[in-house]
Image (tube, one colour):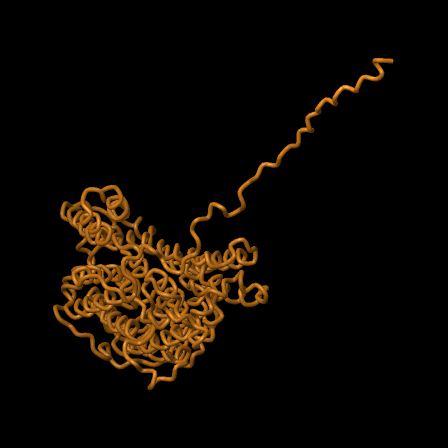
Length: 556
């Protein structure tokens, strides 16, 4: 009984069952420490800030040298096909340089006001070669006479075709088209502006690899690695290497090529190898005049033909497409806001005026924005407008004093091609930077960017390969002018990419996806209406003098 009255033993504490705690992963994007930035933070000078005059002069001369390479390449392509001699080629280069200086001044003063160099465009190769082929079978007393006749026909076609850009620009039609742009569109377009010129890069380096490859390697090492590893020793030295290394590299490799030429390294090679490697095979110095000022109708009275004029319109239109994409790349690398639609419109109209002048002064091809000079803005981190304006002085000076200009134009083309590998790559990468303003996880955006980027490279490659194998483009109807338009338009990567991206972005699920497309950020830059546009636009794109009382604001 006593045992029954004892209190029960205390309960034994049972540990709670083991519960597996889930592993806590950090939220997606936690490590993202680089938010979108409208402007690059490592630019030393933007559009309206200027380095010292000594730096301006050195950089301006470098811009002249860089654009000179593509000028010589273009002249070397079209002048022999037109029946021209080395002397004719030298005078064509002088005309190109002279008009590049004039058109660059026009664009930097009253065009986009961006630091863009206007240079002869490869978009005009197809219609110019088509005109040359039409006169190939005619009986002429000499090849020079055929060249002169072809030049006159090319001038007439360029004069008439330039009116198209004037209409598109000054009627604000181009501005209305530009208001449909978005970062989704500009990403592939700017990429292809750089990538579409890959044929001028390593394929040209490989034509004289013992010169081109050392130039490419030396430029990368001296410009990138030397300043990084030696900045502790002397800050001034590293600054010079970072900004002016291309001048040093060009001088070293050019001297190396001259030594190889003088030593007889190319005495027993093919003529084609000699033309690319030797420093004395271009005959530009011996055939260029000491002093010659390009003047209107220097080749004779222009010949106006309807078929040639319509065919040239394809190239004129392509130059507008390519320049539009190039302006967005320039704005990024020069520290400016994206160009407003009205600025793009007036730029295209002014580009038409420039082509009209080029036709009058005897340049056989129209101009567009020089892509290599855009890349140079990023490489030197100097986007100053003044540098580009001073560079026009070098263009005009060396176009008048032909012997001096021919001296620099005799630099072997693989040296320029090695530089293009770097500069075109910079421009292509700038296009990638536009993706930061869109939803990168949207399959809609990925689809549009991927398709337009691929077609912008693949379609022109098909046209180039077809032309190389068949000596004519895929368009082969009885209407030669129609063939020239089609073969020119679809041989341009930026044009194809801009057309495809614009159609898809403005028709494929375009309503309700404004944020994904980056429009809330992008649209204030494209418009210039008060209360809606970004106030910084006037900082970069307003005219140097007050002209608003003379020209209606919708044209500005």
